[in-house]
Length: 442
Ligand SMILES: [Fe+2]
Image (cartoon, rainbow, N blue to C red; front, side, top):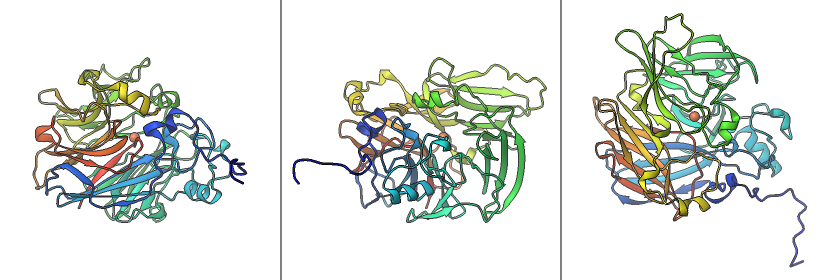
């Protein structure tokens, strides 16, 4: 009968909360769009795919005030070739996604709390934190579980990646590091929720596990990211800032920029850190003797006082001395039109209005400001073609939210002329705030 709706189904609308409203309204799109509109020009040397992942709940959550980063992993792929860009997007078919699609309602409960789930899951992964290419497969990672592997062309889910039975632990970081052809990885709470065990392992380019080391952390805390050098592996365990309350306020996990060994054998470790009273992060450098018996770290040095997050480097220099870093930053002096953005942005996610490029030789930060009604997502570096191109010489690609059009744009910036855009690629869809991505050369 017309006129009245009487629902016999569970509620399908998303809760009227910031993390599900405005630009943060779940995207839920799967499909492809060929030949996206481009303003400016994509250099023909740029030939590869930019993959990124966003938490994007396919269904209204079981727990109403679910944080934005608990959504299902939806993978976007931007294939760039001959100056054109083609777009593809597909959800990872996690156990959670498949069971919920079948049930037509959410079944997973609170973030990292299996006792609130409506059904029992073998693996609670949302596969929503990072997507990276290794040994012919894309790995969609969430640090509480093994990764899911995907076909890099079709984005179809192959399955939970157990590395032919070699994975020694229950968890796998979302931030493994490539060292040449080798993937350096770890899992924390590696023997199950709440365990202090950390498992470090390395995988060679053929997928064979080459080294496994079990460690016990002094406290059980999130170890979201880590750093490697020629001889050392560093695990930042910083419970004050890696906590759930901070994440809910929009602050992110604890990231690392890079670490390396200097000429005297000291470790140099760069990372953005916040103090306890604010979520604004400064870029800090710790320099210390790894053989020292002093349990306190020497005082850190501030190398960037801008509010920054999502640091990335030219990853050919991972574990080696780096002199360039890229990151998101918030500089209110750049002229962002917060009056337009605020009522449309939804909430819960981190807010940055520009990309930063720090050159350690001059210690100057160059800024790319994408527009007055725009906020930026994580920057990813694309090296310029040629075997010996210098560190940091290439392009930076980042997804940008345009709150005037309520559409997403992919901006490409040449690092030789960082304050100007090289190309802006317009998407006919709005992509929610994402976490991490990576460039994969053709
Ligand atoms: Fe992360």
